[in-house]
Image 1 (cartoon, rainbow, N blue to C red):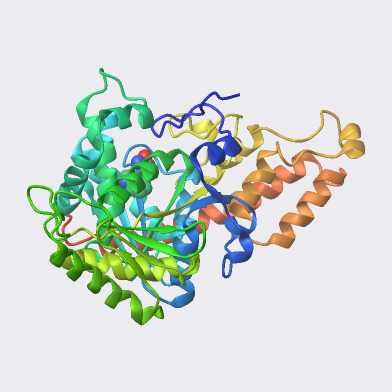
Image 2 (cartoon, rainbow, N blue to C red):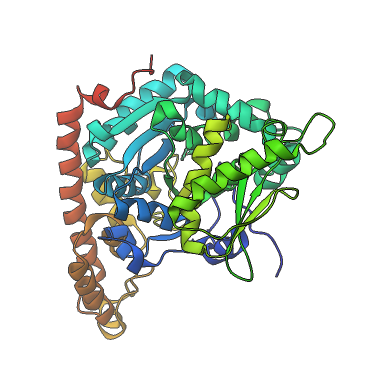
Length: 460
Ligand code: TRP
């Protein structure tokens, strides 16, 4: 079984094999016990995997700066599936993070043919309005457009030097026929993800990107590229301790003491080394063994948990020396809620999901027609009970509409024991969903003339 499970961020069909993706791409599983005041999606195992979430959590615990970045594709209508990311963004915002939202108008143009003007209209009327209604705080949220933020594009272009077509072929399955706008889209997304770390957009701090697992290829690409730009690497040694090593690059070779003939200039190398030691010593280390010739410094007394502080010092130093000084983004991944008719949710198949602007009637019709985990006769259902794992009403209560864990547990008990019938759980789901939709709709009206509060100044 060495067949690769690819992930195509632009396709929405096919089932998702979560455990294989986790293994193949080296995601880590979320350990709920490490999350302060876990949100509903954490508690229910919906947010199940991550990269470097511990770094973001540490910022929350230390009350040090943390940014959240997410992006939206301004095409089609916003549905329940899209709201899951916003739930997570809200959770981070509630724990002190600043929020940046990218409107992927360039990506929508490249991959869907959506004009910039249409993308803007859809973004504002459909997405930003619903984000507001879902409860994002405008004073800590900034929505921008890819097409109007030159820094994002410049960063995408600059970082494009650190990758090549072969990598794009293997990550995205691009071929000779792929149009070049589509090839550029992932680099713009790298720009989206990285740019909040620029001094003009909040500066050096961890950035967490909550996404569905389909977006992981972009995060892998970003992390890979960021790693290649770093001037200093920190590795854990097998024998214990950490090693800092210089990563020689054209931009830093003079600074790191390598002349144009590739010869080592010991005095400038020594200057850099003593500066590094000066920066790290105050963190509580006295023992260093440096090898200037190889460009390495061992810190035998440092442990894994010191890595982050040392890294922050070195990234700041890199910036002072003229480097980008970037951190790899952290990310979290949620499971997809099932589509209502089996298979996946899709904007282009309205029967598979509930749109934010669906009427109660439209929603009720969809729930009534959705896949049920009930047995075919009442008699059999009473005897054997329903199957919550298949039942859309149960699943939607769990993913979206029922906030109380105890209520979910009770519904599960009643349904699985056969006490609650398929029609009854549908009714329960419809009731809860009606309240949910009505509330969102009211809030939309409140925000309709105020979405500008979320929009950044450069969104001309
Ligand atoms: N590619 C994302 C989508 O298809 C949209 C997006 C653009 C995005 N930039 C982003 C998502 C940055 C997360 C982070 O929906």
